Image (tube, rainbow, N blue to C red; front, top):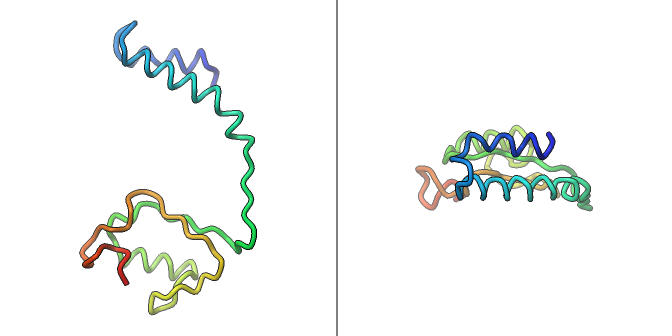
Length: 106
């Protein structure tokens, strides 16, 4: 999408000349200008068998463990067997749920 197209979307944010519209225009412009540099960055990890990413846990410890087991990251006792696999958990931190100390307690 071009910068003029992005800026054209601002007609939905506040009235012309408003602070909200100005801030949005500045943020969109900065993001648009930075996008090529960000896209060109290359990340390389060594000695990593694989990367497994999991979304927001929502405090659901049982489904979290089920997912880790299905991915071959933990055994039936919940112990890590994933080797050098990197686990990425996005969303809220895993300290919610009914288990005392949060979801991440074992």
